[in-house]
Length: 110
Length: 114
Image (cartoon, rainbow over all chains, first blue to last red; front, side, top):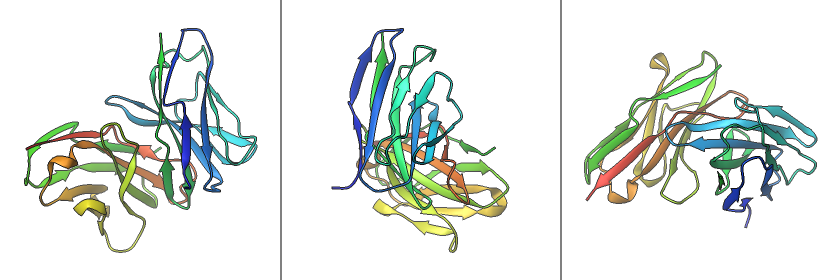
């Protein structure tokens, strides 16, 4: 089955720790995206990558970092500099004008 | 910069009622418009999309939306809702090329009462 896999589904971390969220796709899409979803806020773009070894900041990139070493993989690191990291994180890839979403990772920082 | 406004954050309807969720966007150029749905505990799914052509687009599960360029609107409609339509609905837009990602509205939480 082709699709986007995010793991884990739920993640707990202590405040001050960096944490990396995984996103893998086997759709052979060039472009990949990370969004953050908060209640009443909709989805906001964190980072995106249009091609391997290249990525751009989105609207709320502060406190996050990404890498794109392989076409299939676009991991997101939530660093200790992110002031409010508890949220639902969604990864997507794009073909043409259409985006395809993973199931999300719910990160809770305690 | 693009922005998307969804007028109703919470909507409660009875089964068989008609539904219209408002969506307005601000962007002067060519846009692609989308409605996504997120059922409880599930991932985001595409309901319908508009790129060009007929401004009335039909999507899955009986939903449709009409693009009115003069009003910068892309309202979602369904003539008769079902309990299973309870979900969060997001309007989204990207510019013609689509490379920069989607801009989402804040969502509308729809509850259908049996």
